[in-house]
Image (tube, rainbow, N blue to C red; front, side):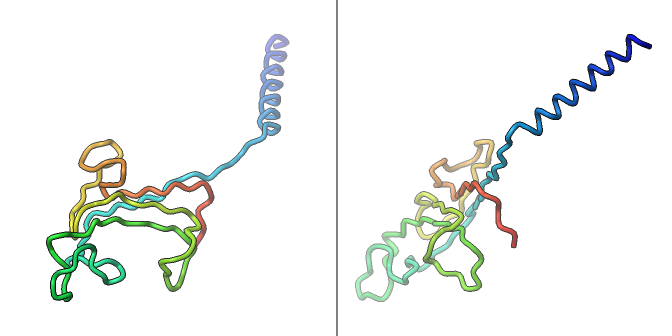
Length: 140
């Protein structure tokens, strides 16, 4: 019994030293994450910009936009605080991101996935927008 007591005492001593070292060591906690948006389909049958103007060439007569030259479609995502009435302008408090040029006036996109399969590229041409953030996500 006497030989077991010092061994148990040594184990307890090591445990206390280990726990003490954990409490003394400074620890930094950092929230890190990603907001991801996947666009699967979009349609702009009249070929108009958000302002209501034609994307490129205006057809003769000035009434309708030309179907010959389609829009170069791109999406912008902006993360900001909750707004009862969403304003397209202002600061993107929590970050922003954009797709690459996705195509013409309408298109169905396939997500590439995290395993690298499927169509599209890392430049956002597959409709996948990733906005990294380094803060705690706000509680709603």
